[in-house]
Length: 608
Image 1 (cartoon, one colour):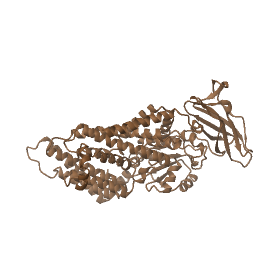
Image 2 (cartoon, helix red, strand yellow):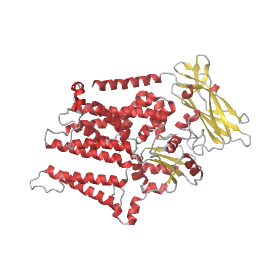
Image 3 (cartoon, rainbow, N blue to C red):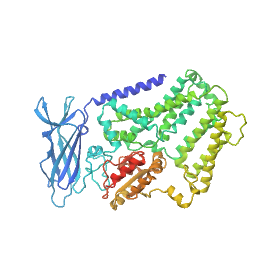
Image 4 (spheres, helix red, strand yellow):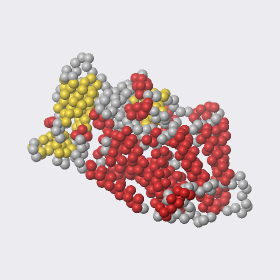
């Protein structure tokens, strides 16, 4: 408990430091974010996104073009608010955002130039900045975006982002207006308490996604494995240690991803790592079946006996490590809150607030797990055969987690055979094939029924796998008539793009709206999108009117990373939409899973 208190104290300290950091002046480029886009060949729209507690002077804007043969007209802007300045008297100021229309006259043959905008402003805390020039490249032939500048439009003007496909730096609309961009804006603009409460809520919602479900039997197995003597307090402490380990991993890995642009968990999705982790669960499950007792070698036990005697029950360090590994390996998919925090870290470099937000989000994800861990203690009866039955049930669950982990890296037929074997043997052990005595009690009949259902499910899985089915959810679909089977398994046809060059070439030749889907074999949410969203009839009808491209980033090689970086994505799933000219549609991208209904409405907007 002393260690838990120390971890919580460190968390409070991080929050305090983050709040304190918000009270310091920031660099002028971050306080007054500059972006520009082409409205038409004769007009450029300049935007300054002003941070909270900062303002710009209306009479300090200056603009210059390189080459100087490009002539800039008189800027046009809406009136600002009058502020009484101690030194300058009444002055015109702008807060939040200011947009300026800049007439442009370019000589024949010149379609690109360098725009430099100079601004000057102050912080309410008492700091005034010197005139600050910021520059970006302007392509006068670029088409305007449809819904204005979004989050990343306002931050890429410093030159950190690459031009999007057939676009320019000023007109790039990466992630603008989408959910992850709005969440990144929340981190940037909201107060620290609001950020923490919001991300805890995001975590609670993410706790009920498929990426988190495998953690339930892992934690429950840890609690049940302690035996009937474990108290509720001990169960709560172990659950909290597991969740804190998971939260620390999310925070550290998230900060690293935000600063490097690469998810550490994606690098761990390979056969060796997943195989080793699956083997751990197999060994844990076999110990629950009573094949052996997991314990340290005798020599090491003697050496650590004095320490162990002072730690009631021990195992805290191992549980924390299991929480860390679970976060990195079991749940690698990207959701909008995670993507928003990573975007914020990547664009601002503020890893303190971003890391704390991710830590709190993981705590929200772990809150239901703590409840499950404490509830697992309540299912432990007194010493007797019932307790052994509960342990074996959780042993089966851990074997299921092992099979689930290996699903991305082994052939589908192998996983179907593994599920079949697990269901068949579980049904047999539940006496599905044994006759019940005439005076059998209700519970005996109930568990025999469960065993029969598992036996039938395992048999269906086995037959389907041997007959050629590769769909664990519909193993017998292959036995239907060929036409029905084809209709049941139909999926939209995607063209694969393996590099940025291939994507650019395909967008250049597109004659209709384009949808680009980022996918990986190890991404559960990607499979959800295919199974429940892309297979929907209404969604398919709309997708068939588009050019469908798929970027398979399973290998996580250099080309895959370049494709993800092109759109400021940190991992799959992600869906990007482009118009007929190959320019990304602003505010339409999807990060994470989306149900068929909302996705169909999004497709309607993309087809306009």
